Image (spheres, rainbow, N blue to C red):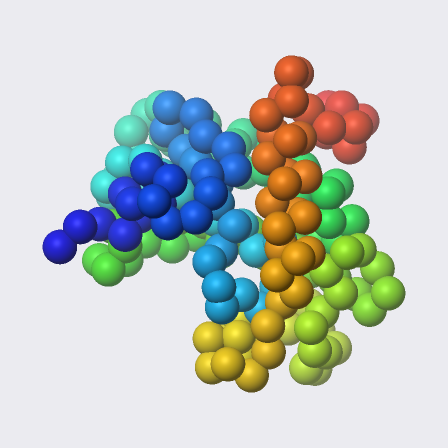
Amino acid sequence: MACSQCSTAAGLRGRVLWEDGLWLVVHKRPPCGVVGHLLLLSKRHFQGPAHFTDEEASTVGLTLRRCERVLQEVTRCERVYTAALGSSAAPHFHAHMMPVYHPGEGIGVPAEVISGTPFDVFLQEKLAKEGKLEANPSLCDQVSESFALAMNSTDGTTELTRRSQ
């Protein structure tokens, strides 16, 4: 059986928004519960940080920081929650980057406010998988395009990133 994450890395399952020699970023495939839910994927098969090469270990934090700064800027969200995972079904280290929105702020206002806590992002993904809600596909595409443009810009930074350095 072919590896679904390798298919993603090859651009066969969704658009690769950014990549370097070790990592790539994609928008989570539908069903999606949070506008701007991105995934940082390792290009190499391994389960998690215990199996990083020295180069992966030295770049993952910098890569996540850059991706999250750009994601925060393009979505205008309050913050980005990150959950790093690895599983036998998808044998690539991957980190979910999920914008946290408050009603009336940012472009990905929660599809449904469940409890009023930032943890709603995780519940929204569960509800999307169950077919009970869906993040606006047009806004997901808009975030993907803006993220890709910013990450692939000439100097690789956005205004927020430049101010934070």
